[in-house]
Length: 113
Length: 112
Image (tube, rainbow over all chains, first blue to last red; front, side, top):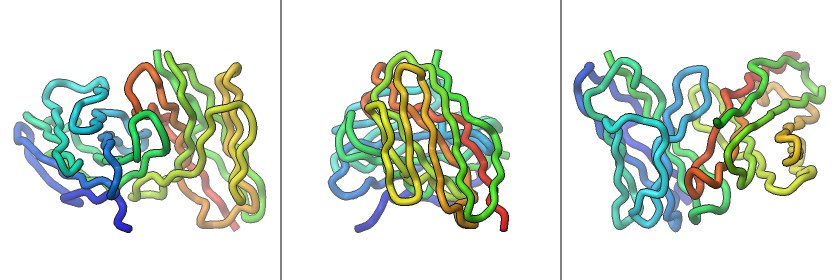
């Protein structure tokens, strides 16, 4: 069975640009969460979606937005990129909201120059 | 506030036993997770504790004391491949259904 997939693997953007990151959860998983991991730190929670509805939002500015599609895949959008947005963006899926462990995808490495 | 503390770095030798501690202060609690993360890779799930006590899974064990806000991950018969970052994470019931609050991670270096 395929695990969580994310695209693209790597991305280089310029300050002020916009970026869209994509995630496909494990088949049968309806919950998707997004995390930002800066080098040397633990992942920081950005968003959680379950059944296409936002279930939680971390302490991130409104430049960050996300959505979940009917097939449970998800997109994370970041507008007006800043240098500080450079990080590994991780997507995780779980089988049900409020239960079980999260399975992480390989991540998208975003570099903002 | 939300706070999860774990040591920044630890070193050990092959075949030894190492214990990685984690203390947490969160507004809610709905389970504690340990993940392993090799450099440049995604975190992989190791263990889950929601009740007090010890959970054993092969060479890895995890302990939880909810009254003390304390957990540890015990790694036995260390191997070189165990060199990685170990992340302690708490599911905060108040924040979202499955959102995890992570510590900064403990980098474990295993030498021969």
